[in-house]
Length: 189
Image (cartoon, rainbow, N blue to C red):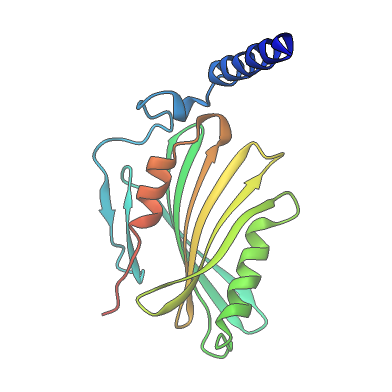
């Protein structure tokens, strides 16, 4: 019986030491950020958009127009590549008035399906709202689960607003991902 207790104690000690010696991911090992985001963030408030957000630096912007069966969809995109493994994006998609977007759940489901795509794995998905506008908060693993995509998406009238942060799993920085996603605000004139 004494030998059994000693084996149990030694086994428990071995499991404890083994668990404590496992290598943590880089973002959990210390307070040093590995995503490349700067300390001085700026508030982006584009005149063509209906939302503002904090960005780790001045983004590059572009506007595309896509012709669809129901009319033109105008997409405004603002992007910061803070490093080779972190991207912060704010997108506004303006849909034609003829398109019925009254079923916000169905519209957001279609938007989520498009982001997940064929190579994505949905990790989490929850319904949220911002200033009374329906939205979704999701985490998606992409490209062989090497990247985590954190996204908040809102339907505001005839526009879909998306805040998307993509980071490599090996250098995931939850602090800056959440700083970005938590900072989105709706602005209506």
